[in-house]
Length: 394
Image 1 (cartoon, rainbow, N blue to C red):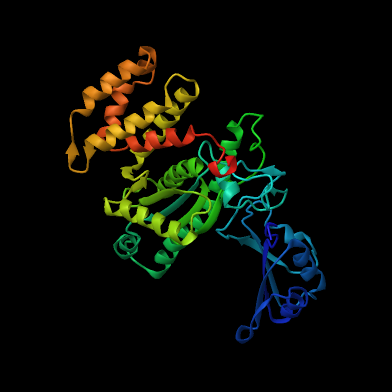
Image 2 (image 1 turned 180 degrees about the vertical axis):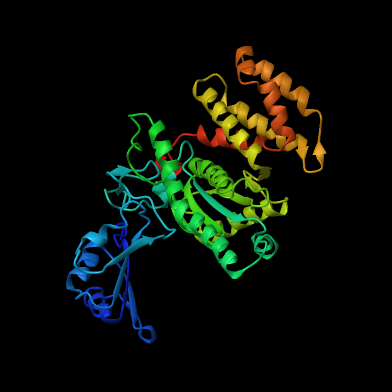
């Protein structure tokens, strides 16, 4: 049941080609009124269909998510008029490239070890995370897309509306999977050689759905946060920096065995919180911030993490700063007492060179004012937890 899906080809057959398809693919769906059949098959089956086809009718073979090698079916039998194209399918899952036991699993647990070629389950995806083994659930949606279709096309015409719809579909169904792989490659390249996660997967994300104007992705919590920012950055550039084309997002973090229907609802609520705050924003760690502030907070969180790992900063200081924020900062304003408490605590618990190098007395107040400090602190706190799950220790 763990084996990754090997059905990488979508085959369409018309008229006399239908017989060849149905003889090979037992799962073929027949559209009798159209004299057409379609099936999802493996490469071996696709080659067999071409082999038994007599060349009459029409046969189209689409390779899933492969813009480099989609044309290969054209070479399988050059005497037959095979047509080839790309099948953009916005779905994907992490597949192991070697044996691995996730830190979230006990040795005596069923399916404790994922083998080469098997798909990772939620426990193992969470085990790819830095620090706390949690899943990140990401939901994103284009803002005001209906208004863009209604009033953003001048002059409006069916062809222009269809073109815009197709371009949106290309981004979400075509590009998103590639972005997940690129983000994974960047993460893998930074892992030290001794890390057993290095070389484990080409893609760390489970792409639940993507198409039209929205998406849902499940991945390691820390990678999912950065994936959200990259998708937004890609979308802005894809739309030519058009200020009217924006996207909102919501991210939540859950344990691997958290009910699926519940995290689907909660991540949707986080997305709606971002849209309700004015759109073109992201909700994470319980706060909603603009995209620039979000990236700044993630980068600051990485620096805080490094300081804790180098033992320049006690991890308990992160928790103190988070309590300070929650006690003194509210939706309707701030209690100015946070400022002297911040100065006193930093002076007492950190070396002066650490405070100055990280520019804590400038950056922390800035992140407090734009309400993004919980993102930086939450990131650093989760990233510096031990990777061994409590259930595994017991």
